[in-house]
Length: 178
Image (cartoon, rainbow, N blue to C red; front, side, top):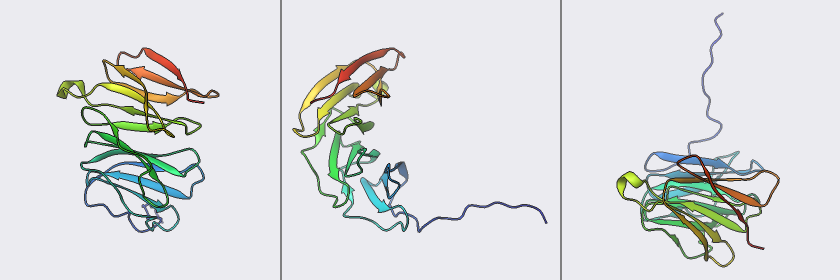
């Protein structure tokens, strides 16, 4: 007999009314969050696929959704020019929207969950080309870096976030709020 392989879904598909742009699995493996062109993100049980709480709604496509390291919060980035913080299990917003001047392409939590980094739009489209660091507890802007396309990543073994510019130079290492 010939060997055959095929995909078998682990659970029923997570329902969106548009394409899914990103997916993240909580560190403990219990939850999955999806971000969609339909203007929503969904948190679901990773074993059953059943939705948890209400959809996380934006006024435009949601580009990314990420869990905090403890799995209790989600941050979303949207074409509606905002990032949002949400309670992962109820779907309720935890703060006012975190604004940019154009589409927010990405957002992520610092390793300790005290800060969120957001990255703005495409400079070719005249977008907001800033990376911003926000205080999660206060919802306030801590730092804004302008000029270029940015992405962020935690610095392993530290409580710092590395901000990288499109020219591949490290733009800065920012201490997190105490």
